[in-house]
Length: 139
Ligand code: SF4
Ligand code: FES
Image (cartoon, rainbow, N blue to C red; front, top):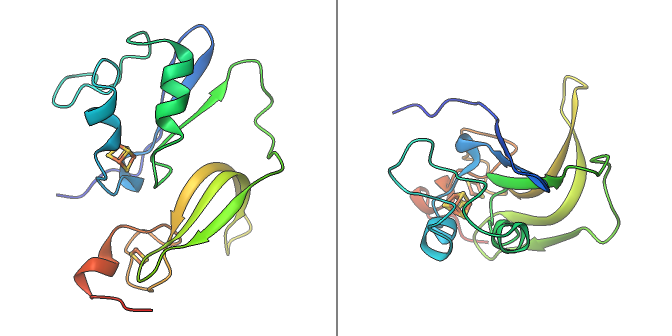
């Protein structure tokens, strides 16, 4: 099944949860750890009122792929300092923090947390889609 390349936003009074389903690599952290908000199998599957905004932001910071991100409603969404890039053995580059992504066609977007493909096999480049497991990427 093809997952749609869409972005959905779920605001509460403090922050807005941003959901990009195509980026999800199914680490399952979100709905296992905070099922009051990430309600697997329900529609809509995200309830931004299901827990405090602090718990929601802490959980989203654990999402390895950037499929889930958020911004504080008062913020201006510009990149902040302190962004790190971790090289996962035989896996993607995991970027933690906000950064500006510049695509080959010159279009730009502000991203928060992402797993970037390092194996070359992803069908959702520059993002990882877990294809490194299929091709048994080793490096
Ligand atoms: S934590 Fe992120 S990558 Fe993992 S299942 Fe949730 S949305 Fe997908
Ligand atoms: S590193 Fe995950 S798909 Fe390439």
